[in-house]
Image (cartoon, rainbow, N blue to C red; front, side):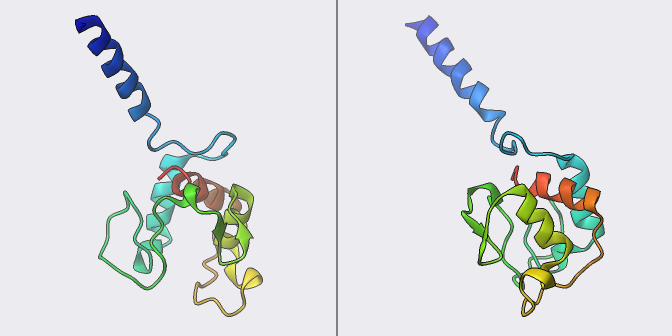
Amino acid sequence: MNRLALVFAALLLAGCGNANRAPAGTQGDAARGRIALAQYGCRACHMIPGVTGSKVYVGRPLEEMARRPIIAGTLPNNQANLVRWIRNPQAIDPRTAMPVLGVSERDAVDMSAYLLSH
């Protein structure tokens, strides 16, 4: 009985490490992406898990991005579309309030890796 409890506990703990892991095939450095999200001031409009700042409700909260079926109201949720949105939201939706921040390709890939893992 005690051995069964240990096996069960080990299985539970093994699953805990995957809680903040991006979907398979996701490119970029999530740790660097967290820093980039802070540097570009994304927290000025969005609540972002793991990124400190004031509580704001201008833009949508950015938690559990990997679970969303669509982003920006029309795009299938995948890393390529998230990178496109981060880099030039006006090209996707000219009426969006989200500004073009001049995010580099590398930063957008890293930011998307972070967002898709939280």
